[in-house]
Image (cartoon, rainbow, N blue to C red; front, side):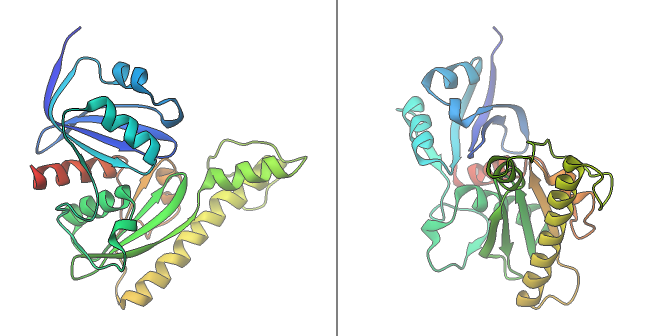
Length: 249
């Protein structure tokens, strides 16, 4: 089997999936992923076969799986992202150690690419908003239930509502149970995002439209109906890990 060598192995260990990427100091290369629930020493060995790298940068929001990754890579050092490492952005937050590593990586990438102020909306298992102030500091965020969490809850707790795959609804008035659920999820989340962004802008006292970048599994779907979102960056977290790795190594 052919081998590939890079400066960094970047690992984004999130609740649903774990992504792996090889990266130079300037650009992300190959990306692989596996379901976080299936992450083990054996699956890691398969996921990383043929890859060689100089240093590892890890963002983990699943502590038990983050430990599995670190143990698998031992004795090689692993840079675990936290507010204690160089991020390229300041941190103005009461308890910095409680900020999720993925949220810090997103803020680092968004600031490096778009400057400040900037808001990141991450449509993952939860939908999270992370804010970098005009001064270039991470100042906090907002967390709401994710799209799948809502639709799965409706399916699980009601006898007649089906499990659905999320996509653009045909209209605001559903002509079937499925279409009604799609309208509630997609239009409802667009409304949620728009309102939260308005409140963030007001609190930051930003008179113009606040720049917003989106990432995560449903970013494209929700952003399609939200002109407030400036850009969708599917690999924003990995990009942040590349930046953090470069700053710290």
